[in-house]
Each structure stands twice: as structure tokens, then as C-alpha cells.
Image 1 (cartoon, one colour):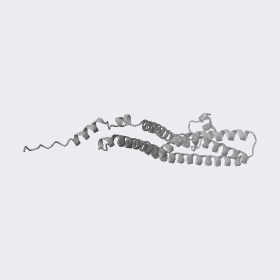
Image 2: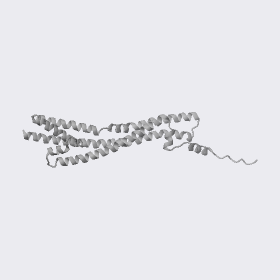
Image 3: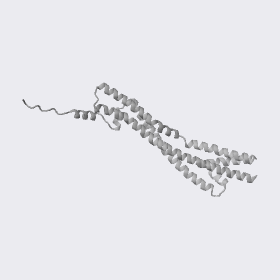
Image 4: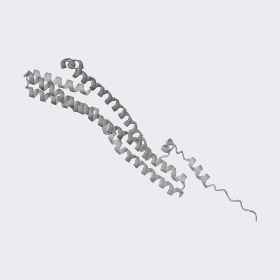
Length: 242
């Protein structure tokens, strides 16, 4: 009997051909994803973009405010006239510390011209500085809640996209009755891509939130320290004047 030539194993070739049919690049994974998963991915990308915008804006803003505070403190403690410094700052202070100083000086001059007692003037000046510090810090902390929310929520949103994608992948497997790697891999890759985007959005946002919060707290303490020192100076001058 003639020898029978064994047939070549083409299963590997078939799997490879099926894998090529699926584009596993990032763009290909996005385009082949389910509509719900696409919306989740787009939301995470938009959140990440806005987070980086806030991060760069806040970082440069805090850096400039620290430099302005250092410059103002040098002028304040130089021994010059407070009235001259107040006239130079004017009605439009350029940084929170100058705003606190201007608010205190306006209240001091306004209350002193009305013949109020020293205790009343000192209390009003302190209250004016506290209100100004609170208002300025509210401005600086704007959008910080968004960073914290992205850092805590984005991984779960990405996980939702992953779960949804895996469910669709299992449905596709059940419909095709094929459990080969070529059928399973694309759906799993699409699902895990959503989790990756969630982590890429959350990690920088949470890291920046912690760092920026620490710097803002330090700056707030610096404003409070200046308010207390300036309040003590005003109180002492009022006592000497009376």
C-alpha cells in the first residue's frame, strides 16, 4: 500500500489569520468597541485632558503666588510706610496676600475715621482679613474637587467599561461557538483598554490633587500667619494711639 502523507496542521495558520483580521492597535480597539464602551472611553479621555489642564494651571498659579507673597513680605517688612505701600497696591491687588493687606487697611482707615474704640477697630480689621482669606482661598481651590473626583471615580468607570466589554465578548463567543484565541482576544483587549484609560486618568489626577492640596494648605497657613501678625501690629498701634 502506498504511504499516506500526513496533512499539515493548519490550525495555527487559521488562528493567525483570524488574529490579523482584528486590529489590536489602540485606535482599532476603540473603533471595534461597543457603543457604551466607546462613550466610557471618550468620557475618560475628556476627564484626563481636563485634569491635566487644571494641573498645569494650578501649578503655575501657585508658583506665581508664592513668588508674589515673598515679594510683598519683603516690601511689608522693609520698615517703610504702610500708607505708601497701600497707595502703591491700590484698589486692585494682584495676589491674595496683597488683597488681605488692602482689606485690612481699608477697614482700619474707615473705622478709625468714625471714632470707634480700639477694640472695635481691631475686631473689624481681623474680620475683614478673615473674610478676604476665605474668599481668596475659595478662588484658588476652584476645580480641585474635580481632580479629587477623577482620582477616585475614574478607575470604577473604567472597570464598568471592562465589565460591559467582557459581557459582550462572552455573548460573541456563545454566538459563534468558537473559543479560539482569535475570537476571545479582541473582546478582552477592548474591555481591558477601558480599565487602562481609567487608571491613566485617575493616577495623575489623584497624585496632583494630593500635591496641590498640600501646597494650597501651606499657602493658606501663610495667609493666616500674615493676618495674625498684621492684626497684632494694628492692635498695638491702636493701643499706642489711645
